[in-house]
Structure formats: C-alpha cells, structure tokens
Image 1 (cartoon, one colour):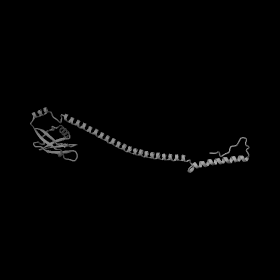
Image 2: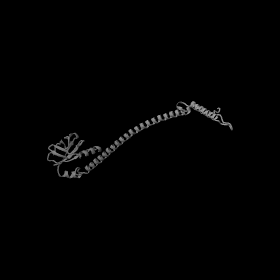
Image 3: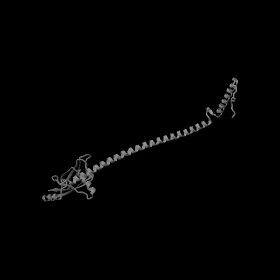
Image 4: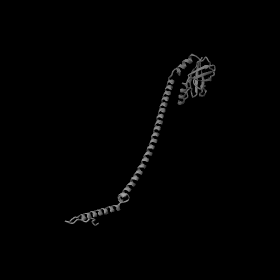
Length: 230
C-alpha cells in the first residue's frame, strides 16, 4: 500500500500551506484506515471473526446449560427415588422390630407354660404316688370311676365355666381322688396337662360330677379316673 502522507525532505522549508497539506494527508490516511475497519466490521461494529467466535461460544454455552438442566433433573429424580427407598427401609425396619417383639413375647409365653407344666408335674398334692395308692387301697374299699370332660361341654360365656358329667356309681357323699389319664403322645399329653391345670375344682353329686374353671377353660378333652374310698 502506498504511503498516504508525504514525508518532509531534508532541510525543507515548512510553510503553513505545506503543514496544512500534511495534516490533510494524515486525515485522509486515517479515513482510509477507518474505511478499512468498517469494511471488516459486521452488524453492531464487531469484527466478523470475533463475532463468529462469540456465536460459537454462545452455542456451546447453550449446550452446556441444556446438559446442566438435564443433570439437575436427573439428580432431582434420584433424590426422589432415594426418599422413597428410605421410607420403605424405615417401614421394613419397623415391621422387623414388631416381629422381634412378637417373637420375644412368644418365647416368654412358652417359657411360662413350660414352668407351669413342670410345677404341675412336680406337685405331689395333685399327683399321688404308687405307694400312696397302695396304702389307701389297703385301708378301705376303693372303686375307680371313669369320666370325661369334653372341650365342647363347658357352659358359660365368661369365667367361671362349669361342666356337669354323668358318672355311674358316684354319690354326693364321696370325695374321690381325681386324676387325669394322659395320652401316650408327648405333645398331646403336654396339652392335656396344661388344660387339667385350668380345672379349679370338681364336686360330686348322686350319679354326677360338676367341674369348675375360674379363669380359662380347657380346649381339649380330659379323660379322668376317680378313685372313691368307701
């Protein structure tokens, strides 16, 4: 590109006219530069290359913002699923805790029943020995009278429950020794012993007996033998 401003020569005499000419040339040169810049500029006075980079950066920024929004939605969805799972875990924990409490209660009941059965078996007042039977048999005439208290025969909606059973040969003045005939099957025998412990008293009458339960009533049949001394 040719110079737009003429250089001064050595020892040139600069007059006002010459100086003003140089000023005009300088202004013209700046005008050329301004025109060139305007030619390179786009809308808004931006250089096209820079403007293109801005457009590309804006596009990348938009893509990143879209991805960030999607990531935030995924995080929110995961948080919601975590909250549901936490609630389910808490409910399962509460259920397991209740099961544990129920199992502990059942164990306590089993231990209590076992102790009651053991105490009943060891009770020498309720169960007589063979020697006692022999001694009593030698003192007087005895008769063995069978009777059955059925599970369905108890009368009453609430305690005390009663059951009257016909027994041939018994009288109201007899005070027989009554015992239970246990099943040979262990589980059944245990149930019979537990049920027998619920019977509070048995009284006699002419041709009958009356059994009474002050609390719970047996849920199994009880086969009895009564030894009456005469």
